[in-house]
Amino acid sequence: MTYTFGQLPRRNPPVGKKATASSGSLIAFFLLLGFASVPRLFILGFWIFSSGLGDAFTNWIIPAAGFFIAPWTTLLYAWMWAISSDAVHGWEWLAVVIGLLLDLWFVAVAARLAR
Image (cartoon, rainbow, N blue to C red; front, side):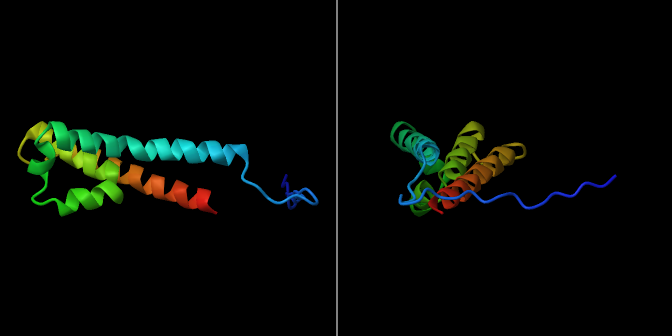
């Protein structure tokens, strides 16, 4: 037996009221803001209290760009470098890829909230 589904009914916006951000999107924005600040705080702490960030990258441009563009990837790369103390090898790349996926997820959620 085959079932067919029709189009869902449209929600009518309230008459006479401007569309405002719902409380759910406001909460999501603050959660996203907190999620974005965590790796940046760790990068700052890693830079201030350890020499691992300077050892992992040859110059300051890449970690500075990573601080703004891809903080989870930058943080996990420097952390994996500090674990093995000379390079990122083998399974450590998995952590860096997870950081990249977290950064891409962050961008996707931020773009969705901006709509």
